[in-house]
Amino acid sequence: MAKTCNVALIGQGFMGRTHSNAYLKVSKFFTDLPVNPVMHTVFGMENENPQVFASRWGWKNYSTDWKKVIANEEIDFVDIVTPNHMHMPPAMAALEAKKPVGTEKPIAGTLADARAMVEAAKKAKVPTFVWYNYRRCPAVALAHQLVKAGKLGRIFHVRCVYLQDWGGPDTPLLWRFQKKLAGSGAHGDLNAHIVDMARFVTGDDIVEVSGAVAETFIKERTIPTTGAAGGIAAGAKGSAKKGKVDVDDAVLFLARFKKGAVASFECSRLATGYKNQNGFEIHGEKGALRFRFENMNYLDYYDATVDPKIQGWTSIICTSGANHPYVSAWWPDAHILGYEHGFVNQAADIMMVLGKKTPTVPLPDFADAYETQRVLEAALLSAANRTPIKISEVK
Ligand code: SOE
Image (cartoon, rainbow, N blue to C red; front, side, top):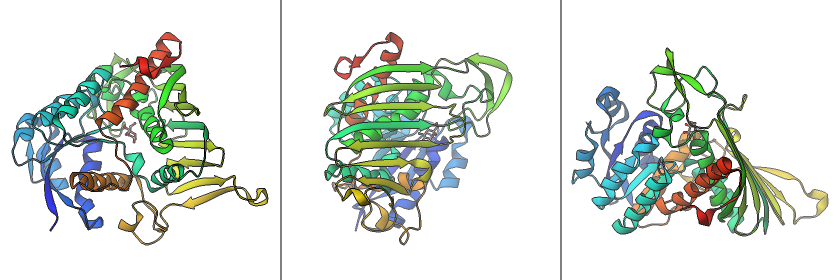
């Protein structure tokens, strides 16, 4: 009989829904997990109606006191989906209680918070996780496996983008536009994902960042009257009063990897025409890979080792069953997966780690997510000082 793990979810909002859905589904599709999650308690603030969220999503209990939730002896795993500045306090409390803990990305609102969390995790010696969900798209996991198997050989170029367009002037001053709540703007929200993906797929680390440009196009936004709790602007309305935006709308930068590849990263919330387009192109001496989330079931591969007469891009449908990562848990061949499956796949991998088994592909823990955070910090420093920044200087 598989063991069970009582989960506490700290927070609600958009990510609260994706994680709740993952815990609801995971044991139904991944039928041989060493540990199965039990949706024990969800925390939400009084004005967020956690009782409604709990009954809608199948949480057995709800609470408006996160400290009590974490201290409850019945809780085995603490999962945090609050706005970024609120990741550290519950994470520290969980680690203090020697409980495994996960957070939404980025690991924290500031590098200092992230560092404190890494140090506390080292002392606690319990598993930690950061939900970089795009790693768990079958196509992205396959890209990681292909690079690891040497299919690209030496990597020369890494080109990453994360483009959205919901941040126009009519979008109110949600928490994502406030430094004290979010840490940074599109950068920590979107570049965080593609820096993680680039490090994950290449298996290499970024050592230097340069040429960074950060821009806030919309400098003031209306104070929201609804929908401020998080997620994209859905349902949010602005009042007549305006407040100052103190984070970026877009950040672009260049980077160097340890093994010699050069890279570019670009994120924006004002990339008109793109709703949630993240992706990468990676060029190596033996081949190349290309991924775009808006077509997430496909990975493009170029094999430069075959006869030049037949060289060309191949579009691989990564949910076609042929041992593609995660796919055996889901539907018959090519019955296509979506955004939410990445979260279910992540919940499965977390349960594997908690059950001392190997996940399908590596999961980012606090220490790994801290490395991504250092790269993000370096880019902001590079933009502010108009100079290259070595990651070794960012602590
Ligand atoms: C909003 O920009 C957002 O919801 C991000 O916070 C998520 O991490 C991303 O996956 C989708 O867009």
